[in-house]
Image 1 (cartoon, one colour):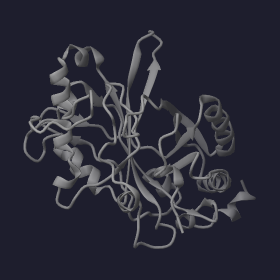
Image 2 (cartoon, one colour; image 1 turned 60 degrees about the vertical axis):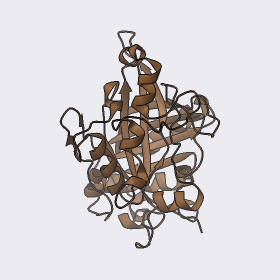
Image 3 (spheres, one colour; image 1 turned 45 degrees about the vertical axis):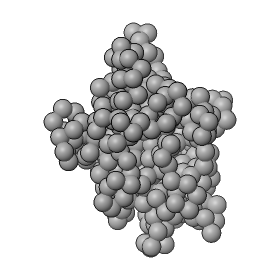
Amino acid sequence: MNLSQAGILAPLPSSGRYIFFSIAGDAQALRSALARLQTMVDGRSAVVGMGPQLIAALGCEISCLREFPALQGKEFSTPSTPEALCIWLRGPGRGEVLTQTRELVKALRPAFAVRHIVDSFLHQLGESGHGRDLTGYEDGTENPQDEDASAAALCADLSDGLNGGSCWVLQKWEHDFSTFERMATHEQDNAMGRRRSDNEELEDAPESAHVKRTAQEDFEPEAFLVRRSMPWWSVSPQAEDHCGLMFSAFGHRFDAFEAQMRRMLGLDDGISDALFKFSKPLTGCYLWCPPMRDGKLDLRQLGELAAATSAG
């Protein structure tokens, strides 16, 4: 029986939206809101992730969940921006996503307040079926497949209410296209470690190439994740374009991501990932995606929710 939220392993949607919520009520109000959310989410069109501050506010503990670490390398750093709750909406178009947003926001009030929203989209499917980053490079080429994907992304051999869940990493990366577009094509390819034209890995790529920094099989133990990243774009009040990649990855624990990020920052060998030359992470958070049970979110790890519904 598949216990996971199906959207974790499903192909990327045409339209996506990440809704981040802050806590605005006490524990009883939170439990009432989560009881309503439990029956509304199918795990496919909406994937739910809960952060450490929400779990703590409920007086609970999730063994595989911790805060995102702020890491400092010799040249670059990754910020930690904790979130209480995130819902990743996955739809065929913006209309469906907007309609679902209104329904979920209404159901979660007044216990949760919308903190910010990031809209995303599928960009130029490659021949391998993966979406492309706005730089034109395919993302997720090295994702494990089928049973290997389930083993990498989903928790197992734990307790009921945890098995089938997932450890979710989210980072909002912003690209500096002025810098990127000044780079020659071979410099861009060397930074990524692949040719943009055919997605072939470069055997002679420098050690700073992103592909070499994050080669999942080169870690001990191996650091496999399932990436489900999507491009994002927004316009500021000054009419300036801001865009990049919403890095989204699922694992059965957070160790694999941290191993990769430490190597990207050069904490292992002093070599920084060339990706940092034209892109930087603005945010970073860890979330726990609960499993599913009987078509609903399995929130047994959070205690009794139904009893709080009538009081909400």
